[in-house]
Length: 327
Length: 144
Image 1: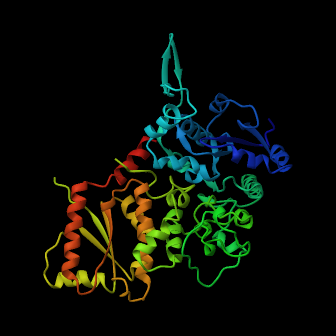
Image 2 (image 1 turned 180 degrees about the vertical axis):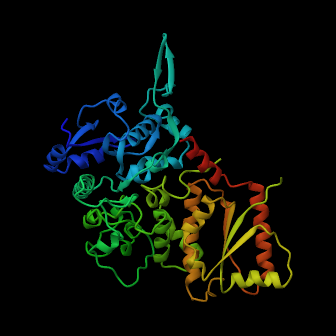
Image 3 (image 1 turned 30 degrees about the vertical axis):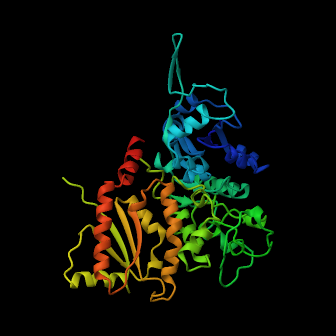
């Protein structure tokens, strides 16, 4: 280990691994990372054990980059450990930033999830009664598994986070820009962004960067799933009745989805000034419905099945209610 | 101690707040459980306000605006009318009981109606008990 190299760790909590791949996706830039830094832990790409990190002194790591949400006790343990050992802790990707897709499960009680995954599922052996438990004693052996929490947390509900990089996953170009900015700040070549900043994205909504043409007034009589309608490739998707989260979402992805005919799903998180993406999108949708009659409005809204999971697709844990409060 | 529901009321300036004012000047007695926040129009009531109120410990949220057709800004209350069913479905997905959030149209001359609505809602929310939201979120985070 050369003394002048930055010490970094890259880790995943409740994540799919796409965030790690987005860092690998920076192509030859990965060699620059290797030149500037010693990677002390990166489960997807390098060796390195938890005990190696535990053996470090506090603050020995210059940067810890963690993707994924906190779903179980292992995720939480590692978030605390990496926070303790690092000078700068980065929440990387939508799950780390807002809970992401895993946090959609916050709308369902833990017991229902276990039931569906392990007990009542067409792909299981009939009669299966085995469910994962934190502790199992068998033939004198004691087996421990991480505890599956009743809900999902975004990282800053568990540890102190310095910077957020949004995206599902962050676009490789933005990942590169964010990592470069961090390296420059840590090596004194540039000023560090203020703590709590969203880096690798812009201070405006996605619609500001979307090149689709927008009419003066949006009015729709029904909504369509993307496959239910022949799309005008030039016009604003919302005007065509295709639900698009762009107006409530931060720009930074390069408008990749709307440019490909796919509505924005909101992975870059709330636009600047927006508290809850879901509530803001709800307002936007209500504004364009072309009706003043309660019954007709109800009928139009039937064309928006499962609106909540769209509106808060990545942000349930970040919404003011955070999870289901059903009793 | 008996449970007294805390209800946040968002009232539009032109009809509903004036209606509530009329209830007061007419000396109509009604439940003191509603905390009124005056906004210029029911369209100003961002759904975020409702979520924030629940997050911060409100047991109920009452939204009042001008009757359809009567909006001072001609169309503002229709925006609220369209938001409301979507907001209710979102709240249902988050497990918030139906009766905790309510939209009513109250005109400037309907002091009695406003008082009746507040009384009725207070009793319904009292029957539900305290909102679980604030305590649950605090307990979630305390465990971490």
